[in-house]
Length: 154
Ligand SMILES: Cc1cc2nc3c(=O)[nH]c(=O)nc-3n(C[C@H](O)[C@H](O)[C@H](O)COP(=O)(O)O)c2cc1C
Image (cartoon, rainbow, N blue to C red):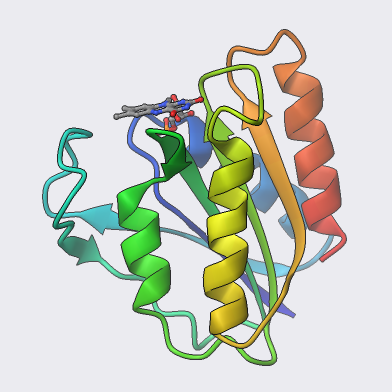
């Protein structure tokens, strides 16, 4: 199974989780590629009218894991724009995760995962596993390990 981990990350938190996920999937003998979604203007203030610069292709992968930061209690606009422009995901196994600053999942994490699930469902697949990492939580490391473990079951 070839797995694509596709993330949007501005300050590197989401990317660092994705890298750990990749290392563990490689260790488990999966073929894995880690790709980044980028916007023409990455300044976080550019919330509306996102223009994507790097748009990773999903056709090559049997499994996909999408990762993104929470922005203003919602999914990052770049990841949202990226997911919305994808072709059908029917037949692919999909997981997702988000990172957020605040320590409570209801401060944007839950909503962002819900948004990702809805878009993926509209694209023809359900999300099998998901994770939320609260960056300022004292148990952040445990949350990362838990998210990685559940996404590895993909
Ligand atoms: C414009 C902006 C809005 C944000 N809004 C939220 C928010 O609503 N809730 C939250 O918990 N974190 C929020 N954050 C913090 C990021 O979600 C958090 O730092 C995340 O881990 C960043 O991921 P990255 O390093 O991959 O870009 C916000 C950050 C920025 C820049």
